[in-house]
Length: 226
Image 1 (spheres, rainbow, N blue to C red):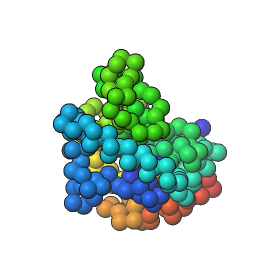
Image 2: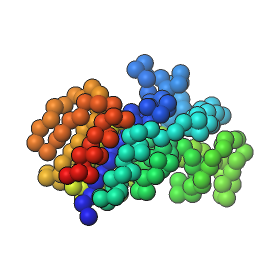
Image 3: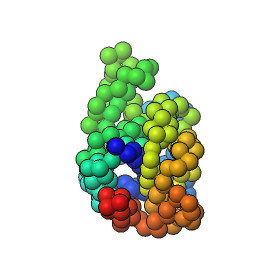
Image 4: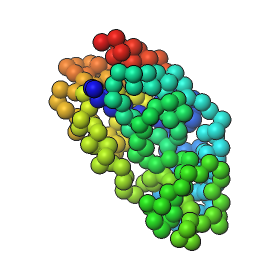
């Protein structure tokens, strides 16, 4: 079975009503990202960080997968599909995708602040005093700036085996996620879906100048009928 990798970013979830990670002014929901998305911010003001992600978790419960998320599920009828996402939401899973790798962590999980491998499903607020079994404060299961991306190696291995790569909702400018494309096979066919693409179609690269909710169904239909 031919293998497809989908590299997805904030743009696909934005159409469901989730804000992208960083606005043009460098703020996220009015916060400097380093205050709420770095180990330094956590050490400086733990309650602020917990409150910030508690708000994001509550917001996530109010939105639904959109046409882009849903269309990607159809590819599993014919292909071995893996989604590698920079997003921390669960919209791919809720749409029905069965193999999703979250490079930057997951909003609906919490983890120990002393053992990064001690991870719990967590759907409500994380409060000060919520402890793991090692008696340490739980923190959001999010990869913050300055932290290693533990799932990068598995993502590289998946990308290197792909026959097709679909890039949607991301400009591929954020590292280390942006480095994944460099591991693709030379003969892999790439689809780049972006309403304002910064590249043009060329050999083995097809650019679809559409937003995710319209561009993804176009690509999926083409692939299923090929």
